[in-house]
Length: 417
Ligand SMILES: Nc1ncnc2c1ncn2[C@@H]1O[C@H](COP(=O)(O)OP(=O)(O)O)[C@@H](O)[C@H]1O
Ligand SMILES: [Mg+2]
Image (cartoon, rainbow, N blue to C red; front, side, top):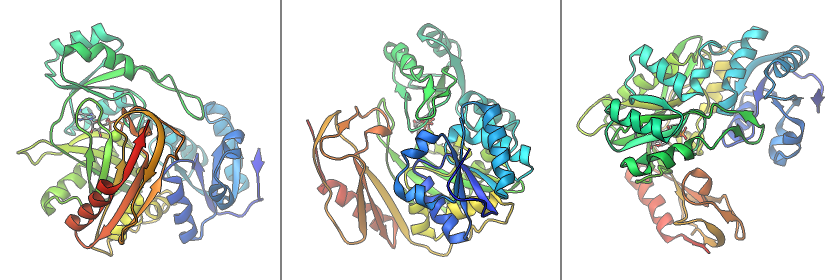
């Protein structure tokens, strides 16, 4: 079924543009003069923000959880609208995008490997096969199995328990001893279907070796199998059991050789999970005293957390434009045109409850956005769903950008009752 305007191609079909990076894809399509089409479910489209709905040239309404039906509906839509590129936005639909691209003969990722970019068990196997530095891991179904694995695999403490298929740190725990292992496995296995499409998830859990050190992220855009590295970003997280991003800064502050190593490892990770015409967001940690980036995960999608905005503010590179170019089979524009800095800081609550008040001061060089409003329920700070808002700071240097963002965060007031 088609909602909205008739054929206007050639354009790009985005499989579920709702979510953080969708906004950047819409802007990028505007800059490239490309019609952008969406594949989604009708009731989900009905709930799109006006800005997203009005930006779309047309919508393929289907059931994305029913793969044969979704592929048939989207294939017909692609032919009708002269679609020239397939993009994914939600990580969970990146394998579907690869299958569709192959079926309609458009540039795309390797459909045989694409599931490894969504499922951390297959991802671990792909990294091991490619010899990419990554934490050691094992699959577990319950607490008893996790105890046996922790002993027999010599993973040491702390260790990390996480769901095979999830994001946003949902269900991820850093466990410092045997007492909390069983409850961490329960938390990792609680997700059986993903909101809002109701996509069935692999509900197995992984127990992973803990990699110490600072954390970074790096996108790689790949066009016709050629990897183009994008800027490295420093990622800050909470400490302790739940690791939630508290902010990101670009550039990363790493020395040029180490940043190149991060880019190289991220590119290897992207290629290992079959990214051929697309983009990958890779997260890495560098253990103290080493120059070896370990890959924590990669996803065949644009980054979340407004990273597109941070990277463009710092370097002039628009990752969403580069992604659209790659899915169209064009050479992506990845050359930096600026040497500035940008930081995003998230406002997190100390505990869950109801948001009573929130105040973020206005400071030159910064802008802020609220994610929750007074009266909204604030989830416990166990994953990224608890974010109350964020501030973005732009400056000439990393120190200035971080300092400005920290200043605004320190002067912000969040009251949760
Ligand atoms: N093996 C690990 N060693 C150290 N920290 C980890 C490890 N796995 C995950 N983490 C921490 O937990 C965060 C969330 O885990 P991640 O695997 O990225 O899951 P998600 O897909 O939910 O983002 C990471 O950004 C990192 O800070
Ligand atoms: Mg992650």
